[in-house]
Length: 366
Image (cartoon, rainbow, N blue to C red; front, top):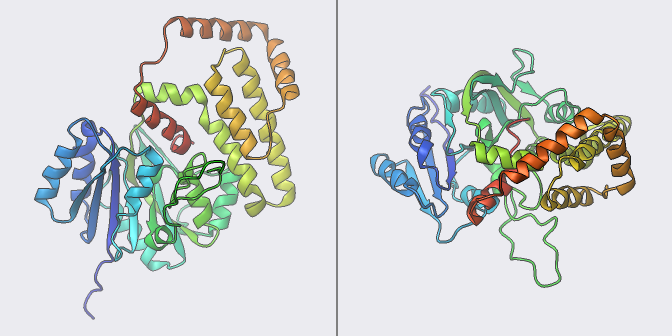
């Protein structure tokens, strides 16, 4: 029998001012051992040489398409916009951050697992995270694991294999099933809970929500090989994300939302109680770190959205208990005063948008 044709894979890279690493990212796609792919590069009104780099590569390979946005979109809007550019014929989709890259066998090995197991909706692998290999924990040679079990272990903190969008291959049908773009809410209407594409633009860490949603109705495939590379954010970005400590709220949000779906009632109650206690300890420490108003608004709003409004009594108690450790508390206050004296932020509005979008979507450090 003649060999079966390779299914089409849509590779997507949304870009905003990514010239520093973009060529390296694109070269890693060109180096793939898998051949039947299209590469959609979406330029989000970059002010550097990103568009020039994209167009240069597109001239060299007809499989590369460049989409140049007419107007600047916030990060999650741009990600949804990018996902809508994939070919109707694509069977799988591979997102790659503009500052990440893939090892040559990445797409081939991931597609191999997905093709052999039609029940698989998402395929992951080990990744090189700067200098460390992670997204491990699945015993070899577990190639296919029930999606609900992956989600259960993730919520219990026993496993983390989702990584970032660069880490995963997704069946394109799940992307096509996403609702179409919605009109902005009218006066008096709330945008909360609106879904406007593959990624939910209204919630924290939308890429993780995608995994929980897809794995309710499909299995998780895994390649026991390092296939992707993730680059850590620059110092400014990392500092700002750390300022909000988004991962703390993100874990609590998904435990509250998906615990009833994947955990037993007893497991959910126990882990939610433990997580909220741990969360208030963190907030209690934050009082003495003199966090700014934006920090408290971020966490207050997040708690409201998951149905656990900020309890001032619990915050006071946690702060009091923290104050009993006088030496550490004094150290935190001194560090906070020193930080404030060193000056404020110089980020432009677009850079702030990128930072806040990272706060809402970056799960790669979990």
